[in-house]
Image 1 (tube, rainbow, N blue to C red):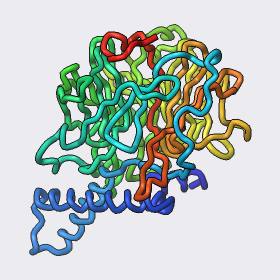
Image 2 (image 1 turned 90 degrees about the vertical axis):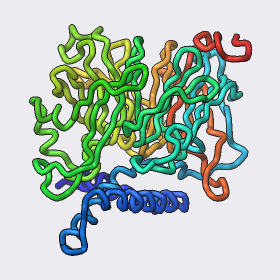
Image 3 (image 1 turned 45 degrees about the horizontal axis):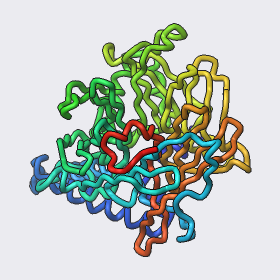
Length: 438
């Protein structure tokens, strides 16, 4: 095993332990995860029917159930970076060079999202907790004390979809009233089509003997939901690999058990570039898989991987096919010392553009991050772990910077992670936002 694959194996299998050394809040997170895992273990043990008459089997079952619960409880740190309390909000704004609009942000400080203008003024906030979405019994949810939303999507009229990481999706109205909730164990991302169809990523911890006879894995799925939140279809990504010419990527994976895939973004292709490659056909799904350092395209009808590219990125997030036919990813660990955003031709793999590869453009987000190509050609980047969003020109100039004003930790000593920052056309919310929009 290469040194790189050994590190990835550690990252996939003992992630909570490695991050626990980052700081006090990381330790608190780990203890929360352990408490949740223990509680889930009690529920699972009862259903497993273990008895006192077979101590050896009971011990093995208990150990397995504990590992399953630990895997399903994996999540993200709410904050790891300390920053001066005075540094918050918009710190750079060159209006003539920036793309005008509003900014939809998802912060780790709370189960909420906010819409802010280019000056950082908050215009609207949505908030809804886990107890609101799933009141009463939450025994089936892997993370019972979810403290933030991982991803959101703004709908017409101010309605909002929000992902509780590893738990499910809720839909709320502009006043944060619950419309529906689905405990589908969604994580990381949602893709919404014009007809309201929703695609998301889910996962299940279990033992798959054909991959490993004893060690559990997290099996990732693509799930399609109706606009009303009802599940229409579910596709196993492991089976999509097994049914394809790319099965070797699965069998040669660096992480043998645990979080073997860690899918983190999904986009439905519109078919504009099917002439370049049949894999880019309408309805196919572009998916980022962190632990494989791989971006794939899945045909959901045939349930198979029809295209796959690995590296030169490392632990990437948020793969997108742009209007130019190029592809962009948030490359978490691919820069020499930090992260970068890289744009490339998906067929030739020729690099077209990057930001973050040089000392003067340095930034870093180890576990999360988003990128959005704007209409003016600039790129909006969420440096999630650092709680910062920045808009950069094609030439690499930072023309807008936003530092999350929210703090987390026992003494508010950490800046809250900024999981997502999305630029929204102000005109698209003018029919419901309760202030004049210029």
